Each structure stands twice: as structure tokens, then as C-alpha cells.
Image 1 (cartoon, helix red, strand yellow):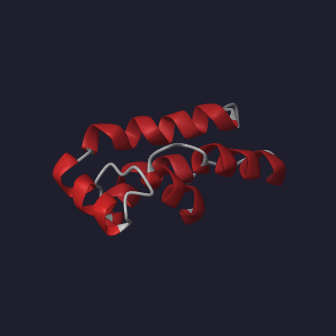
Image 2 (image 1 turned 120 degrees about the vertical axis):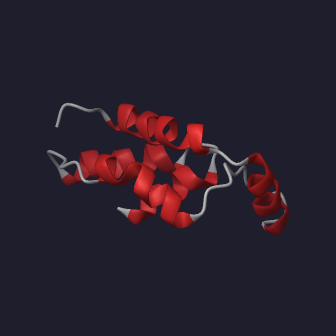
Length: 86
């Protein structure tokens, strides 16, 4: 796999951001007591948007773990959820 973990995390964010729903994001943030930033995407939309990205194979478990951490460290909660969907 030639994608670096950081590129992977950035690609996840790039796939999700255009689908953002600010109205739904505000509801999600209130529900979570404003502890997290949301894009406002329901799980089925999020999973469909990144399906091809998370299907990629990694050269080592360490690279996969690093990619998961990079995604988890993004501000948007949907990136965190995507990190653990894999």
C-alpha cells in the first residue's frame, strides 16, 4: 500500500466533509454535551462514503494501527467512528 497513514486519515476526512449536514451536526453535538465536533452524518452515509478507503490493505499491522490513530485524532467525531469501523 502506498498511502501513508496520514494520507489515509486525510482521505477519510475529505470523503466525509462534502457530505456534512450542519443542522444534524448541531443536534449531535448537543446530544453529546458539546464534547465533540460532528459533521452530522448518520452511520450508513458515513460508512458508504468511506467504503472503498477502508477496504485498502496495509503492509503491516503497525501501519494499519497508525492509520487508525491518525483518523482517531481528527477533530470530527465521524473520523473517529470510521477509525473503529475498520
